Image 1 (cartoon, helix red, strand yellow):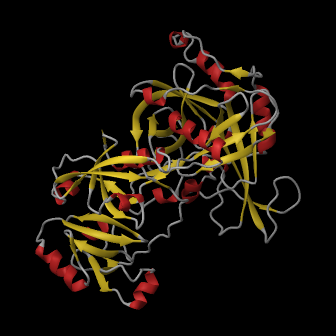
Image 2 (cartoon, rainbow, N blue to C red; image 1 turned 180 degrees about the vertical axis):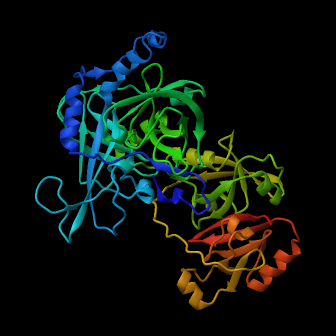
Image 3 (cartoon, rainbow, N blue to C red; image 1 turned 45 degrees about the horizontal axis):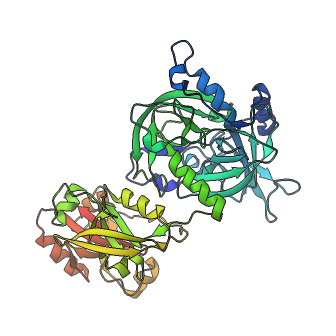
Length: 504
């Protein structure tokens, strides 16, 4: 999905699932649609005996026959002005471009779905999947399937291919909502994704590689998967049901014929398809996003105004806390934010929200995002070994800003890092404000402790073991005083600060 998954230290790549249709998308979609029986309008009711209907003789056929009418093929057209990436068929999703490059065609103006005026552009055609979730024709799919598309078309079983309106897109969860016109539609009811258990059977239905509707079977391998770096808000269901490029936006179904997830991503070690590790946005989250898009045209989220990271045992010990501490450590507090007004400080470890214990940073991030701006929330944090109770009134989360990658030259230094004093020239070059004081990272040794910890050129080191440093000399003095023990640094990067534990 997002290219930031492919971090320099990442070992496993997350691959989004949309793909390019090899032939004529429209005629192919119509052939697929014509081959299937027409659905009966209305909800896809599953009788109470549906779970018992799965047997050695019938398999999952009774469930599939009811649900498949509401799983659709989604094709989109977008026009881009390159740089020119590699041209290899099938894969047009953002992260697949990194490995394979999109299929592209020259595009000119003139007609429906044509490119905007201007210089010569290229045309990208991608294919994914979607699920009809209302009688009125609302479709949930992935944001990366339809984002920035000039034209979106949907192929339904038993109906001609039709245009779809993009009602809204939420890139932070990779969920998008489409609207179909033309009467009533068969739809799949939402299931309770909170009730899903590891080991439950699951069916994945979608349009892999653009070949047409395909059903695969597996189990729920894990629930609550997060911190994958795929999207901003992650609470994925993990399944081993075969998922491949083109399944993006397709349905993950339980044994009651209910929608429990929207298939979104796979993990693969350089492979082009299914490796038995797939991820789906849980239906509870997808439904909440859809309802906000339908009501507001976008998703409105609460914001605390902090940068946070998980409390690992090593980090907890470095902060003077028991190694089994669970929660989120505050690495930065935005000026004027809800967190600052509530009295939250850098280095605080938030362990509870509204009286409920937190498991990690993802847990805090998801709960804050679910709350409305203006909501008052009670926080419990650990500060210098004691517990503090705070109340914050949430702000509204602003739209995200793109981040620029950091280029890292090789060098050496005390921890395998080379630092320099912050001159006016270096501040201009790296965009560092005057109020940021510390030592600037200008180089790293390959495989050095600092490189392994994630530091990069342009980072400003503000603290060593919770003590402020204002110069390279002071930094070296504090690092040397640490001996062979791990060094806890506070680093500034692109307007944010975070704790970095460097182990030698």
